[in-house]
Image 1 (tube, one colour):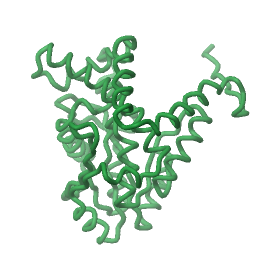
Image 2 (cartoon, rainbow, N blue to C red):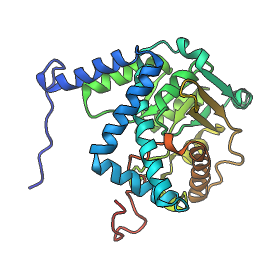
Image 3 (tube, rainbow, N blue to C red):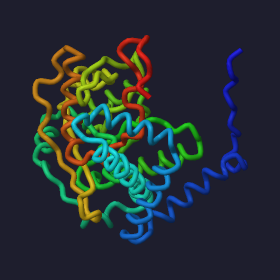
Image 4 (spheres, rainbow, N blue to C red):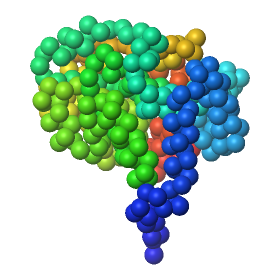
Length: 307
């Protein structure tokens, strides 16, 4: 017999959710810390995870070994540690994006490529924004809202309490938060002229994907990017965002819409999207979410796990 799925308590005040409520409270408090304290505390958090979360460190080491074979062991080990520091900072950046008015961050952001989004919106077909899972992802969404209105596609959280907190926060930043399984909803919003932020750089399994190169490694890449573009005719706009080396300011940049996309070849289209994402990651590789199993699904089911 298989394992029974654990039933979570229905009432959000149940003691089962007290740790979640504690985490939410800490995020709200962390959002109001002075900026230098956020950076320092985030580094400490990342250092602790790097030291004690062996499984997550192994995943990160594996990803970076596959994606940056040109690095020697010492340089790769340094990048692994910097990745944990950046993602530790990212927790407090997320808290800030979710819990503070984005207007107070305006002086911290430089926006480039503004004209590319203006041109895309002028076509009147809506826009599909290609986001990337940097540690700055949710803060990037808050900063983006200062310049352009957009909806967001997201993965619902397993905890209903945290899901409620997260969804309310994102709906404050974005026009609508759309479940990633709701393709019809995404298409409807784009066809109505909306810009929709969508991140296709995670492994969603074999059925939803084709295999295309990502840093030279065949990776399960979601097919939905070219399908949405084909169903709507919307231009596909890559968005790059990162924390600057001063650890106080951020840069958001729109690149020109991907030309002649989609082509009708899902593998070729997936490879083009991966290439755009790879080029963005190479600018600040330590800020990418290398902690997830990007190469979990292998082209041949008989292949051993890379992790």
